[in-house]
Length: 222
Image 1: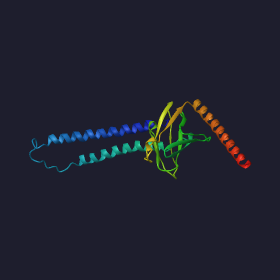
Image 2: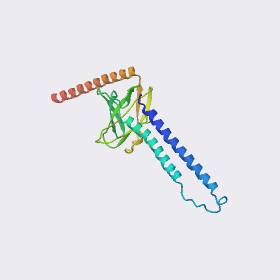
Image 3: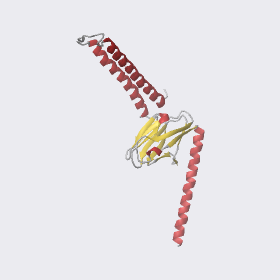
Image 4: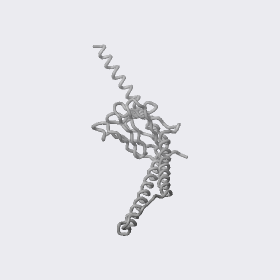
């Protein structure tokens, strides 16, 4: 079965919220029943309750089962998030006050994360200064980015489009402006972008070297 973090996360959320509402309704119903059944008007003399073993077993066993159900779905989602597919495309992400930068395996660097649709993307998370947190709400993924410690996460864009990237860990005065984008493109468009970006970067590097050489020659002449 194809791994789908978004679907697994949403399913877990729905199950936990559903169980919470079920318990709220059950507890509220029992509370109102006892309020009317044992009110002073209907029950002027206090009833001597000695205990009910069956009831005590039920209100212990049922919550335990519900918690185990929630744990199962939560752990399944966590395990999925921490096991990136072996064929995932690797991108190095660096967080610094207050921006994100991305470096691809061929050396291309960008301030926007371009990715191909339908391809698993594994991000290597690094911080150049303080603690950050890489968060992409649309893909239901968030991981801490800690200085001196490598972390990782992965996701797979299903549709072409632009998706917000935020920092979810307060990192200073301009924390709220530490924003970026994930741009999901069809494979052909992504390949074209990556090739053009590599060509432009190579050209810019060559121009920079030529400029430095000219300056050095000028200094030697003087």
